Length: 497
Image (tube, rainbow, N blue to C red; front, side, top):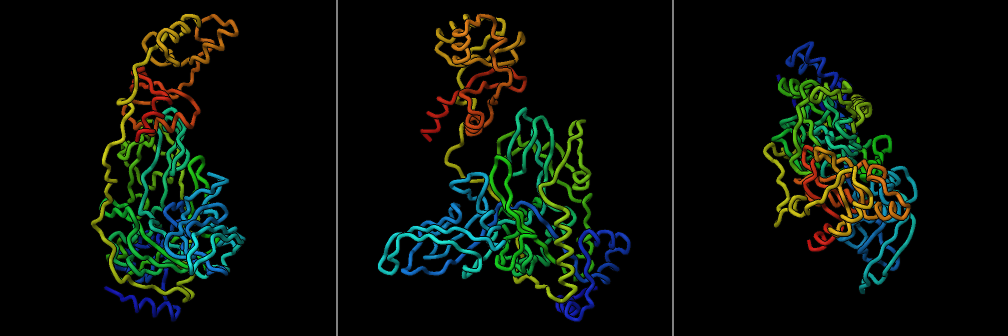
């Protein structure tokens, strides 16, 4: 049994179309089987609503009088890219404000425009005979723009890996805040409502497919960047008219101590042309598997701890080596369902017809890592030997070691050589000035920020900056001190790169 897209569109026009959401289709196929479900259902609607950092907007501001050829543009102090024409610019959602930092970015500018709020525009350029003006400042709303086109290079990931953190420190990532010692696990994607998982072979999703994009009609214009269908990490490149969008389905977000992102609502209709498509749209959360990765390891290839299903993730906890770990989603299942339902209603009302792709998306791509002329050095390649002391020695003896060995940091170790603290030359000087001659137990810092030998020095440098400290003891997996790395050493090294 097969149907054509034109037959389905004719049913949309005459009001006889049968539309269900993807989660409803799962149950329907389970009850009727794929053959009967294919006969009964014409369209399956999908939806996803999550942080999609790879998003942005092209804008045309119109010409000023006298005209200006913009070379740099700022919107509410967020820089937009202006190197394409006189008064066109692209603003990306993760670009940060030059005055408000992590609290405001390109995503907020886009939301402000969609919300019809006024945005402050500042631009500079170089004078030419046809563009004599050098600067302009004004206030605009979305209605003042000639065009505002959302063009998102990578959206609607087929699925996401799960992020957790094995270290003893909090990590702030694009997957949210990860608590120490596997204190939580975060994930994203809409599971059974995922657009691509309902058409994994790209039979109906391709170049030219009409979609729901943030409340407006949009289109798939190609596969997204980092498209990896081989490993079920497909992505879509999409575009649509920002002026027709709604803040109901587009919201700026701040990922704590990481940066800004934009929550983008996407819904893709899947025409049920045959039994095979019906079978694929019956996928359930239990069928969708993904990997739990340790984000405490700062490398591209992170350790995989286990494989879990979206059904397990949505239960609220997963088991990691006998420990019950709480899970939380970076996406909104409520909004994803709302999007799929809204799209279904528009199709039933005859206001949204379907379009088959003019070209198929590739099913063989897999992204490559960046080509690097040299590898980033690891901590073990630049760390120095460390002099360690026991906590029972006196402040005066520690002072003699610091002076005699000309060091500024002394890791403190236990009888079995495990790291238990650290003292600095400042700690010793302060203790001597206050006549505290007792052991180091009373003055050492017990919560020590450390590094490991096999992590990149960039991560160690980030840790020094974030905690405002001057050295990191380097420890092995048994918490034995194997070296030390200081801010002075790193500064010299990074300055040479």
